[in-house]
Amino acid sequence: MEVKEPLFEYVSPHITTDVVCGESKSILKNIDDEKFDLIITSPPYNIGKSYEVKQSIEQYLGTQKEIISELVRVLSRQGSICWQVGNYVDKGEVFPLDIYYYQIFKTLGLRLRNRIIWHFGHGLHASNRFSGRYETILWFTKSDEYIFNLDNVRVPSKYPGKLHFKGDKKGLPSGNPLGKNPSDIWEIVAQDWENELWNIPNVKSNHPEKTEHPCQFPVELVERCVLALTNTKSWVLDPFAGVGSTLLAALKNERHSMGIEKESNYCAIAEQRIKDLKDGRLKIRPINKPIHIPSANDKVAKIPGEWKSENGLKPNTLFEI
Ligand SMILES: C[S@@+](CC[C@H](N)C(=O)[O-])C[C@H]1O[C@@H](n2cnc3c(N)ncnc32)[C@H](O)[C@@H]1O
Image (cartoon, rainbow, N blue to C red; front, side):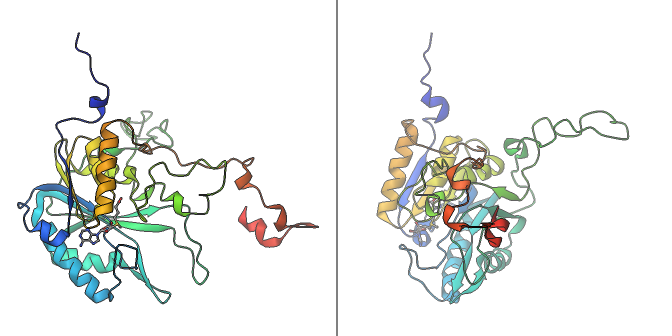
């Protein structure tokens, strides 16, 4: 009897996963036309993170446009680009980057299929405006004949027992047995390590994928795009690969991938994570795992003693509940 190595049911040894350390613009020049079915990335936001030099928004978008032109060239006819961005903020003024990027992609002939809202429950608290709790993913295709495997990413229906109430199908289940379309609002746990829950004991939502990179993708966010927008053995590219989250999502789902990253320390972490995944040692939050909601008895869900007045709660805390 052939003994199957369980790991190879999870990570196929026949899949290529390349981390290329260098500048996207020059590396892309040497890649064949139409190689990739999916290009997914979170580009630098030009907000002065450790790996970027802040430029004027015009300069920043000019450089990005040159890279995006190359990306369109290396995208297959049935392929998709998923561009995940938040806001650029200058002296308190918010510039929603997806609005600027939309113009660039549109000029290059791509077609928008969804503007996905990636909503997360936690983050920094703003004091001069409302706290930001979402970023967007612009999903573009190169043509009208694009890969879209909806069944791969359906989510459980809220009311699977719902029935047709009239017509030929009256009395029969009205939903899809594989689940419902996940919609264009995604509740995928963000970087909980950056939020106020990080140091509080008993809160189980600290994210298992944390590395030293300041803004990693959750692997499950990329997985949804990989599963829906590519086929097995498709090629996936991340031109700003960071610590390789896109490559992990591709490898885990039997897709070839390439990630380009200019910082050698992030390339090294990406290589290590890929190795750890192959060795079955990498901690990844499973796709579609429900988000942790603290119970009323969790310490973190209780109103701090300092906020209670002699007569009960201060008025504003009532609204916090
Ligand atoms: C927002 S982060 C991406 C993080 C990534 N999604 C992950 O999960 O780790 C953007 C990354 O792009 C890299 N980067 C910025 N400009 C680059 C360029 N011109 N070529 C290659 N990488 C670049 C940065 O070093 C940074 O790691």
